Image (cartoon, rainbow, N blue to C red):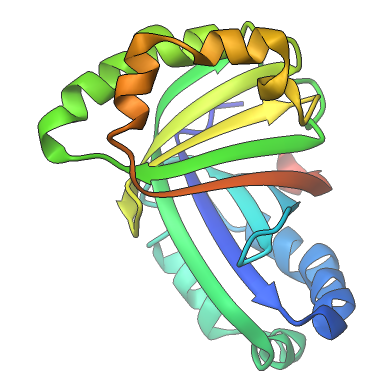
Length: 217
C-alpha cells in the first residue's frame, strides 16, 4: 500500500455530559465513513490530557489535496441526522491539513497507546535552521529514546500553527526518562526551542485504534 504523504486532523470539544454520545457517533458512524472516502488511508482517535479541545481524530491521507477535495465536501454537505444532532452541542471544532516532511523511526505494527504532539510557529528568518535542526539532530536523537517508536514532522497547508511534530510512544513518560532528558538537552535544541511561537503541546491517549478502508484490509 502506498505510504501516506499528508495528514488531516480534526479537533473537537464537547461538555462532559455529551461525551458518551459524541464518542459513540464518532467511533461507530463518523470516522469509518470518512476513512471510506477516496484518498483517506486510515483514521484513529485520541483523548488529549488537559487539552481544549480534548478529542483528536487523526487521518492519514494520500496527499494534501484530499482534505479540500470534492469527496469530503460532499460528505460534509450530506451530513446524517445523527451528525446534525451532534453538531448542535460541539463547543469547539478545528480541522487542519498537513503535508508530511519527515518520517523517522519504525512504523509500529500496532498503534502505540500515546501520541505526543508539538504544534508551533517559528520566525521566518530562522526557518531553514529550524528544519535542519529537526531533521539532522532532534528527531534522530529522540527516536533512540526507549519508549519512542516513531516521529513524523508536518507543515500545515491550511490553518496554524504551521509546524506539527508527532511522536508515537509506548511510554508516556519517555521524554522525562534519563535517556529522554539527555536526548533533548543540547545547545542547538535550547536555541531552537527559544524561538518557538504560538506553541501547543498535547499528550494524547489512543481511544480508537486504526480504522482502514475495507479494500485495504
